[in-house]
Structure formats: structure tokens, C-alpha cells
Amino acid sequence: ALTYSSMLELGTKIPHFELKNVLDDSIYVSSFLTNNKPSLIMIICNHCPYVVHYHEELKRMNRNLGEQIDFLAISSNDIENYPQDGPDKMKELFSDLGLTFPYLFDETQNVAKSFKAECTPEFYLFDNSDMLVYRGRMDESSPGNDIDITGNDLRNACLSLLNGNPISTEQHPSRDAILSGNNFYLNLSINPLIISLIIIKIIDKINIAITAINIISSV
Image (cartoon, rainbow, N blue to C red):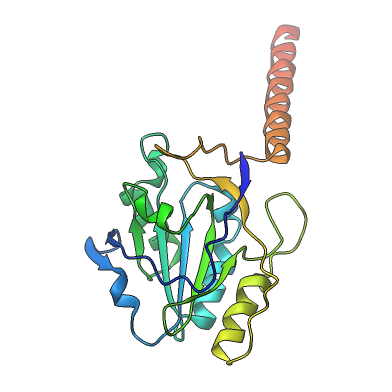
């Protein structure tokens, strides 16, 4: 199912958290981000196609901006229903992607709630004083809408912040997959187009099977 994010109020300070970084099993505390650098915090999870959609752009953005901005990812999804979003798989995914910035596991989902996160992915950009200056989508693309991935909404906000320019107040909420868990809706992170493609593939397999049976029967 899809939803729009609630848009945490601009000017909000980074919420306090202490979470395990699955990459090295250390405890990461939000105060580590108080270092006179901007911070980009994202709420993501492994399996969501709306997150997977941005993997390559996220890698590019981290290569281009990772020295100037602290990148941090948090996964708050329910691993009972989605075991592929568990800590071991989180570590494996970042290793596969070549990403080394912290990837934190929010088992209770309390941190996601403090960010008012309802979707994956959600992006939050904080300035040098840890004040929220941008929240919302990466860009207007999504799986199946045929719009090129640019990352422009988030990238432009980051560049404006780094260059000391005003950040546009035209900020669009994320419209992605609903987080799953005890106080979230069930994550049905598949849009109608993807469902249609799955049905088409199933029909193709059925047709292939029927053809094979007919061939065998005619021998």
C-alpha cells in the first residue's frame, strides 16, 4: 500500500536515538551527529522496491556529498513479517552496495515514530546546527512511472545547504511503501503496475507449461 509522509516540521532538532549499527555491531548515538556538519538521515529497508529503485542514485549521492554531509540510514521495518529486513541482511545489502555509512536497526520502531516516518524511503536533511531544513522525496520518480531517476529534490537541497543558499520551501512528501510493524499498517509495497507484471509472468509460465504438455502429448 502507498501513503504520503507526514512531513516532520522544519526547524525540528535531530530526535535522540541510540541504535545498533549493523555494520559493526556498535551502538550509534544521535549526538555523534553534533559535529558542525550537515546530516542526511534516511528511513529505509532492504526489501522495499521504492528503496531499491534509488540504490544507484543513493550510491552516487554518497560518493559526491559523503565527505561534506554525514549519511545515516535507519531500518525500522518489522522483521517478523519481513525477515529480509533483519540486521544480518541489512549488513549484507550494504556490503553488496559498497556503502559504509552507518545502517542502524530500529527494532522497537520508536525512532521512526519520532521522525514521523510512515514510508520507505524517507529523507531528512539537517543543517550544521542539527535543525531540519529539508524532508521529503528524493525526486518525482518511482518504480513503473517511467520518470528518470535524478535525485534532484534531495540533491538540490543538499547543494543549497552546502553553498549557503536558501533551500526551496517547495518540498514534496515521500509517497512510497508504508512501514510495517506493531503500530504501522501492513507493508504491501507493490504498486498496481508491478502486480500486473507479476500476473503477466505467471500467465507466461502457465502458457509455457501448457505448450510443453501439448508437445509431450503429441509425441
